[in-house]
Length: 278
Image 1 (spheres, rainbow, N blue to C red):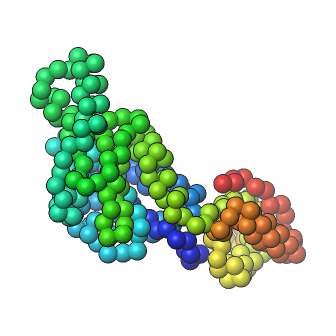
Image 2: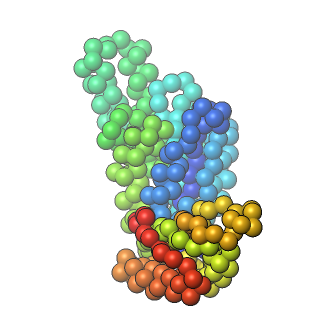
Image 3: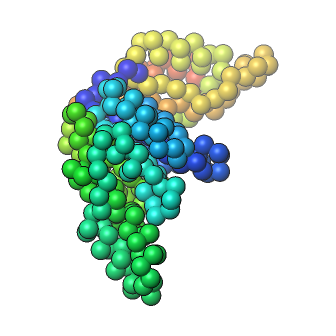
């Protein structure tokens, strides 16, 4: 399925814990789903460690491609290895400053919890670092301040690596920006199809060719043994399409599924059961 929408997105996921395999990058998966729901296209996901020069060079490379929004996750905390803002500043030759609104929120929270020593408070204020000329994005869930900065017609956004904070900030700040520029929507459905594999696969292959503008993907592993290829399997298939409006998408999906079902039934196939709709 070739993207035709007007908004392209890239993700740069940062964190040594990611590249060492200590945690799974669930953030990029979640953002990918949200981006698709808004009718935008996720063009690339890059995972890198907490190296300032690497973060800077990766961003520079992304700015040369076709993304309208570049979302950078991770590295906004108070620790010495939380270097995302400074690294982006290095790439863009922008000064790092403190967002006073965010810093005041952090300090007030610390003092409310009885934390009053300057060293700890100043370390916490690191979470309010942004670049000069950027638009700070306040955190509705935690304390790390994100930012949106315009660069040569593109928007670079920073989000925390903590999943709950990332999701809250994405929906509060980044999603509205993407939606305001998106001119299409995606519609996805997943079906279980009951059918003999050797009868299913030719239909599956042909319909992919007949509908190149629809994403059609089965999640089944083809049977190796001849006997297995001749018995009925439950085959999960995903369908994703793009349209200008929800009504147009629903109509397009309805017509497509009617054609697919007719082909399945003509080949002696069984039921098509909807198991997911988004």
